[in-house]
Each structure stands twice: as C-alpha cells, then as structure tokens.
Image (cartoon, rainbow over all chains, first blue to last red; front, side):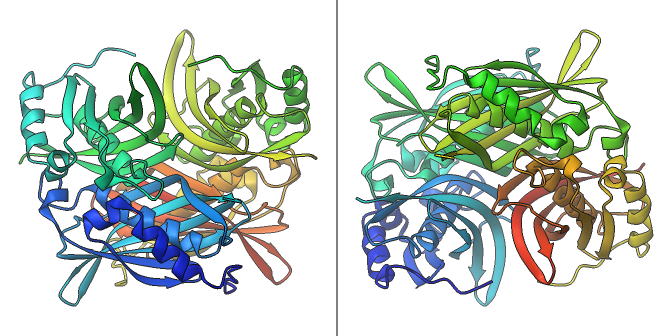
Length: 146
Length: 146
Length: 146
Length: 146
C-alpha cells in the first residue's frame, strides 16, 4: 500500500481535541496511544463496570474502542474543516476480552473523498501476551465545511 | 413466521438473572422492558457519560444495547442449561441517537440448535416520537451443558 | 414508516433500463418482478450452473440477487440523472437455497441524499411454500450528475 | 500469528475435489491457484456475462469468489470427514472490479472447532498492477461426521 498523504498536517492536534470531546472515551478511561496518517490506537484498562455476564469486557464496549480507533484513523486523512461519522461496522468476536489491558487499532484500507473504509482490531494484553479478541470492518463518512 | 416454542418455559427468569450479571447494563442504567419468546427489549436514558463528540449516544453504546437485546431474544429459545455468546454483528447507523430515551429491540429471525440469527433496532424516543437510529444483523451461539 | 416520495416519477422505466444493462441478471435469468418506491423484487429459477458443492444456489449468487434488489430499491428514490453503486453489504445465510424458484426482495430502510440503507431477503419457493434463505443489510451510494 | 496445524494432511486433495463440485466455479472459470493451511486463492478472468450495469464484475460475483476462497481457507483446517458452509459474510466494495484478471484470497483469522473466521480480498489485475477491489469478513461453520 502507498503511504497516505494527509491534507491537514495538524491532524494529530485535531484528533486529540475531538477525542477530548467524546464523553464515552473519558468514561472508559481510554487514551489515544498512537495517531499516524491512516492509523490510530486507543488503550484502556479492564473495568468491571463494562463487563458482560461472564465478567469479560462487553462486545459493545469492545466495539466502542474499535469504532473510535477506526474513526480517528479515517479522520487523520480528512480536511481540517470536517467531521467524521460512522456509517456502519461489522464485528467478529474471536476470544473473550479478559484484559487487564486492551489496545484497539484502527487502520485505513481505502480513503475516498466521502467514504473511508477501515479495519479495526482489539487486543487483550496480559503481561507480554497479546490476544486478538475482535476484528472490525467499518465505513466512515466525511462531513465537510463545518 | 411461525411462533417460537421455547424449550425452557422459565426463560424470562433465566434472562432477568443473566441481565443482572451484566455490569455494563447496570452502568448504562438499562432495563429489560420486554421478554417474549424470540424477542427482548431494553430501555435506557441518555447519559452524557456515553456520548460521542457531537453529544449523541456513542455508536458503540448503541451497539451495546442492541447486542444485548439480540442476545436475550436468542437466549429465550435456548435450553435452561446453556449460555449465549455473540458471534458477530453488523450495525448501520441511520440517525443521531439523541434521546432522551432509547429502546433497543432484538428479534430472532432464525433459530438453530447452535446458531441463532437476530435483528436489532435502536429507537430514540422524544415525547411521543420514535426515530429509528440504528439497525443490527447478528449471530448468537448457544454454549450447552454448563 | 412514512411512504417514500421519489423525486423522479419515471423511476420504474429508469430501473428497467438499468437492469437491462446488467449482464449478470440476464445470465442468471433474473427478472424484475416488482418496482415500487423504495422497494424492488427480482425472481429467478434454480440453475445448476450457479450451485455450490451440495447442489444449492451458491451464497454469492444469493447475494447477487439480494444486492441487485436492494440497489434497485434504493435507485427508485434517486434523481433521474444519477447512478447507484453498492458501498457494502452483510449477508446471513439461514437455509439452503434449494429452489426451484427464488425471489429476492430489497427495501429501503433509510434514504439519504448520498447514502441509502436497505434490507434484503431471499426466499426459496417450492409450490406454495416460501422459505427465507438469507437476509442482507446493505448501503448504497448515489452518484449524481452523470 | 502461529502457523496452523491441519488435522487432515490431505486437505488439498479434499479441497480440490470439493471445488470440482461447485457448479458456479466452473461456470465462472475460476481456478484454485493456491491451497495452503489456512489460506486459499482463486483466480478468474473477466467475463461480461457477470457484469453490472457499468461493465465491471458484479459485486455478487466478487462476493462469490471471495466467499469460496474464504470457505476453502477454513476447510483446510477442518477434519477429513466434514463439510464447510458459510454462516455469514460482510463485504466492502473499494474499487471497480475491471479485470481483466482477478484473484480472490481467503485467510483464516481464527480457527475454532465449530466456527472459523476468515478475511477475504479481491484483487483486480491488469498487467503488473494489482488493485484491491473488495474486502470480506466471514464466518464459516464445520459440519462434522458426514
């Protein structure tokens, strides 16, 4: 794949500002670990407040982290005066999201003027071991001129 | 569609017990509004702690509610000694999830011994008006003998 | 749901012309059975040339029929000078597509200026009995001004 | 990722026999180019009989090739006495499938006793240039004892 050429060189500042406005990320204690052109990573710690019935992180919270990582990955390539919204996503759950740490990775697969297709991954991290818990295929839309 | 014939007549008790063990539902303040054979509804109120950057309920939280409703809809038809897990789901986001109230509906489309396919809907409710905000197509798996 | 108000009153003529240009529909022997505002149905007969290893209609051909039905359902609501393309779709396979007849139904769930979300169904028909074989959740895009 | 350990050392023979029974693959002129543990590739040539209205390969046929590649990738890891069926898949369409040649790649992401999750890719090939046209996220099921 060719490297991406973001039209807005200050994309990281813009994305960190946007992340600061997502109530859910602060509630989850999620942090932006990496913001590169076409890629973004979020990390979070396990929290029993967001568990499903077996004590693992709920699939919807796993989705929240991956969707946010994919949205920011797409947003790195969008113009300075734009917003990003999720159009749709598809998630396969592969392994229980045990924690105690998680990293959600979002990557742009195809960037278009209006739509950007991303893939997401959610890793559960225990000591040095990383387990792929879920994968996402997502479409993001760029809302311009705002 | 033919009506469903649950093998466990006490499915509602079983599902309310399972819902009580989901940390995320209590954190979201979600309640089981309806549990019928092949169908389950959850309700919740808007909470800024779970918002995205524009102040609407985050797509991942919308997903959490629909996934839970679909999981419980499927679980109504599973045996007494079983667990339900999400295999995968796909979500299309149609309208901003403004609130102040939400209702997630899950319905079984096809029930099988191992896999059950469901569809989910998320409505935003303001006074008497309901707006369809998101739809889900999901696969649930029955883990037996536990 | 409110009834749809197509901007192009001649949508059926436009759609039948478009269907006539799809090589795959003529190869499959598929016919447009119904074209209403926000809805389109295609019918086809079983053909062993398009089977999978057990002799049923291949999931990809089931998809072809549902995708076309969804695309035309969306296209009914698009302007006269526009084209429709599939952005993405998700399919769950519920029952073997035995035939001998099939009907694919596409319906618009949410119509937007750029994106239209549809749901599709594929029924296998034997004598008077209809079996739901597959469901689709799809996003279509309107390409304007051509 | 760890390398896969197929339980059936003769998986390639088994898969080539299964592919020979898929009417749709012979109709599409598709050939199994590669069969490794956890991975399978199919190739096909452009054929106007399977086009959509703009003359590109129809999204449903693109899906047929990716679904078959994913199914065979999963099937490499299943027991000798088993069958593989598609449970569901999700496709994002990225670029027009122009041809004149296509290669569909399927890879196992997570192999389980019952369910196997795969990702698929469809490349359009013109001379030395390969363009990623579509991606798939799919779930396959193993039917045992037959």
